[in-house]
Length: 483
View: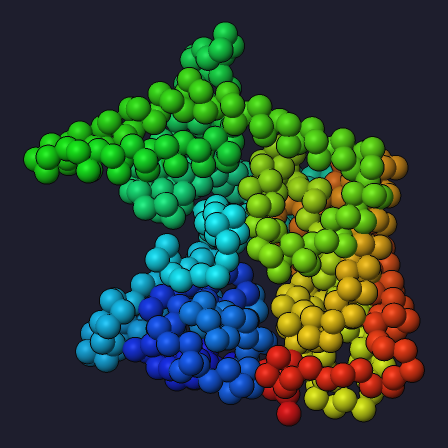
């Protein structure tokens, strides 16, 4: 039986104790800890801890413990509670300052040491704005899908308008949430970022003329909201650095909202609207014209993008497409990369039948991989072995090409929310022909990726003539619960 309190206590103990933890946060699958002394982390015991699917970044200040969807939320909350209790009891010495927590995000604090370059760090901070919104996107997306099925079937006509309102309310105001999160992420007052971003969705903007045309409520969407909140944060910081304390409380919020609001109306909404339109047009053209090729590239390169941190640049694009079209056509293509990993891992399991440790790793990580949580298979199996990582990418490319080919035929597959992948994406699928054809095409893509990943790994994933490939170090591939 799952015990999140015990898991949190064990994680803290194995990462050097509460005094060694400077910052706590989480994303959809990982508990992220900033530690003062990386050498104090017992990586091997942490990997063997029940409930832990993998450990990333051991030996660095930025430690990531893979726990999986749902579990990570409750374990993070318990870690934060124990740290706060320790701080109140005097158990956390301030050699590194007070412990910071930021639930629902996916980043380390701005002062966190990092080995990532400035581009990856910037992309991650932008992604941090959107990651906390994912649970609402998932919930509203599933409700919208259920409502669509009921509407098409003519069932419960008295309930479907209410479901539509519940599903659409968040998306109608998503710009406000983006503005709030952006200001919070970049050091401004969150409510001021939300106030400026709210200008974008206010119906009265239809009376405002910019560049010779009337603005439309929602024009610029999440991109405009992000830009507006960033500008508001810069203005707020300037005001707080130049205005005397007696005037700061009155003038700083006034000047911030006024200047950033006017700049949003007379520049940012128009520019962001043009960019958002280009993104939607470009995605449609890409799939309609070069769908199979685009799928091959996106499905094959997504895992390397994840390793470099560059995949985070896609989160605002996904959100923009969902806001514009009701679904993102890119996510089902990218999800094929995880399916290629599953196929490759199955081939490793079949080929290396005498490597009991590695086979235990695969058995432990495979259920998570099927549901779209790919880190255990990547870091525990394919990447340490080398060749299977490449052949798994080939499987992802094949699955992406399959889905992209049907897009060229006029059958687009989209996801109404971001976050889930693998089998977990099925409830969120829809497309220009409705959910049923989209589900069928997506299932075909998964099967293709599984089969090609399996076959390519079996044929090319191991040195010629060997029945057992060189085993990676145990600390790089021992999952939770393996012997």
